[in-house]
Length: 459
Image (cartoon, rainbow, N blue to C red; front, side, top):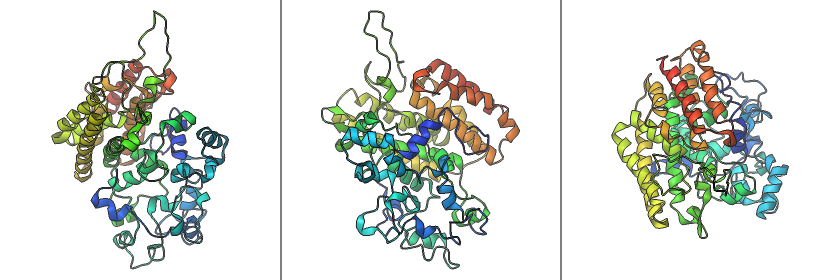
């Protein structure tokens, strides 16, 4: 991030992440009541009164009350959700829709599933507007059951949740909501195919703690903690990685998502393993490195394992009892890619189960002051570092280290001055992943190692 304790991204990855925010597993039984909301959607206007969330300045006593203004911010990441519908009518949106033969993107279900609060016709209240984009209820749930009572004195967070409010303070629930668009789901219009990317849609990328910071329209203060509990950034990041692997493998194991005719659905694979310069001459050099974490036949396009790499690293230090089984399931999954579609689908389900177990373990454990340091060290250590052979995994790694560093500053574990002293090391790692075209694995691994060592020295 460009500011040590701020919410902005490093300029190197800002275009990629903003594009993913704009263009963008079924829930486990414990989540079903919280996330499978079938109530009426009332629309953004219902939340926008000046005595509710529509103030121009954040000076409310209980909550800021300027949440709508933050959501509508025209030039920053915090306003990306409100711009999601409008981008469909942009030149890029029209071009993508035309390439795919979808008609107008602003009315195409394949687009509206993520570029709007895509409520069924029969669940739309009189003030609901699809053109509002990704509105309040996309994340907080259909409001009819709780909007009239959630602010009243007798109401509690528990009673609001019982009335249909989605408990986003729970990392697993929050991850599910975000992943529906920022990776994909079974619902209409919530899966970005390789064809969409070929038509011009940006590559989808996800990191829960960072995305939470970008979209945070409230203060995590004493009142928040009293009502919902204290958020821990390491927990949020780690659970987000586990849920990303869970979602990815769940969708891949389903034939309707994992295959496209005689080909696999390339959305799941590492884009840059194929999109590299090709030379047919006798002096052609190999443009990829063999990756020790991928037991696949030589020359085969690898599955995009950026979240698998992160989860493997974090499991070793935060859930060591499950680390070996997850690592084995990961390698079995990669190996199955060279065996056949059926084998790969079955291996994906086993890896999904291992990721789900890790998600539960990471969500339920207690967190202490040294966890952030331990995770950062694991991401750049001798076990994990050789796996950074591709752009996507490397970009995920430097985002993770930067996100966790900022969290430790916010929580007072590292001073702003000390963190500023190692800014150059972080920026050097970002520079190595400034673009896929300029990515060089050796330089990246060295830069990431220096950044991690500098952070470790502050412990």
